[in-house]
Image: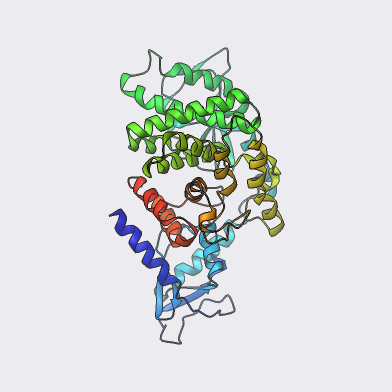
Length: 438
């Protein structure tokens, strides 16, 4: 089934490459009445808002007629927009029976773009910076906590449980069912760390939950170590601790490869650097195991993948937190996070030099269209190739305030269409590895 999916994606990619459309000016939706395409409505490709879920099938005009491009339910991502731009596709089509749905969809998209004013967005970014996302599964109904718990949902934050260090309060079952991201104040991270350390040995914890909590604790402790190192890259104690956690992740996946589903954080409602870094690290380690790398090489890969975005600590927060697309100048600044990351860790004796490849090359593409060095094919090291796939996949499947996330299937379909940019053999292993994620 997995190989069949990959083959379909491969054929689909090449069929799109035969596109030879022409641009039709104007914004009025009209039925195409030339070249025998009477059953389709054209519209501008750049009118599709990034992050939207398509309520109809989308086609593209090729040499041999209309070709299916995106199915109903696909999330239109930044990568999809870049793909269309790179192929020179400026016009898309829907079935004429969907003309009214298309019109309503584009109108709603225009209204949504003005939903949040600038002050609301600034307040949201500020609140997000003051809080730290935690795993919902770490909170068990009835257990006492001495840190307050909040819910971050869309652009709002509200209190779920208010307490103090001296006066613990039991978690009520109802608060855990609220939609959104569970967060705590950053100043309470030490209290949360203590809570996790005592959770597995708690007499109040049902026996059936202990193995699950061990995985949750490993995941959460890894996230906190990532944050610690982002805050202080020269901390040798934290770097050694991260290496120990990577060894534990490798041991878990070596014993049971299906634990990868438990180690990934898949339920967030917005992007968090530490969660993204954890996911990229876990995914990269999983691929390293799948292709038969030695444990020592997987450890080096894991270190590079966990800290692939550490250079973002050198990028202005207004660029990192911008809601919407970066302009060209902003994007050039953003791209520097790759080289800045390599600079930050290059002279650290606790970082293996091989780990730097994942940091420096996770945005390179086999076609030479990546950055920062526009490397081609064999110039990109194995760890760079693996981390590039993991980084792209997690970015596509992570929602933002303004956009929905792609489903795993949709994300893999998008990456498969960019097959020439990514190592095809590694991509096959990646798809096999995630076969059970829905």
